[in-house]
Amino acid sequence: MGRTKTFDPDKALEAAVQTFRRQGYAATSIRDLGENMGIGRASLYETFGNKDEIFAAALERYRGRSIEPMIEMLAASEDPIAGIRELLLGLARSYARKADRYGCLMVNTVVELGPSDRQVARVLRETWSRLEDALVDAVKRGQLAGLITATGESRALARFLVNTFQGLGVGKKLGPDPAYVADVVDIALSVLTR
Image 1 (cartoon, one colour):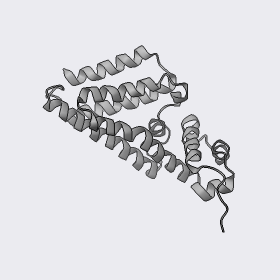
Image 2 (cartoon, helix red, strand yellow):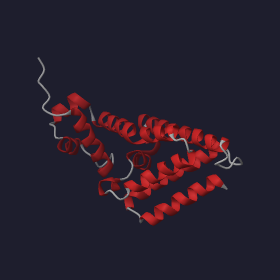
Image 3 (tube, helix red, strand yellow):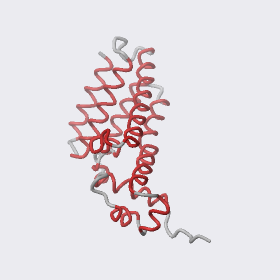
Image 4 (cartoon, helix red, strand yellow):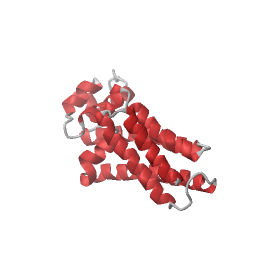
């Protein structure tokens, strides 16, 4: 009969997410993970696997609670421009929370690992592709309603917005002035309505 877990795997995985956000992949050791997750090495390996498996699970968890709700919000938004504004301003609002100054785990991972890990690169490409597709849909709806310029190709505008989102995610680590963020958001939205 196996031993009963004396820790909450969900809370432990959230601690792993925060550890990777603070330290990055390379600077995080199994020891760091065990300490921050509040579990011993044997339980860590038994429940979550090795560092790569923990990182993959952390990326999936982060995507599920951070990026997926943004995609759902865009799809549900009756006013596509308001939805896009909320997407960008939601990220901007998180700048004010000290705990969020570690940046977006997805953006941090692109910067740190890029294409060097095929499994991670696949998750990152899939994530950005889903966000891009949601933005394409929002832009098309805005174009049909006459709210967004019909002269811009929807995929190109969506890619511009994903790039703006990613740039804000990198800048988040430096905790820029809210006026800086507001300027970026205003200019990005102005591109849609020219």
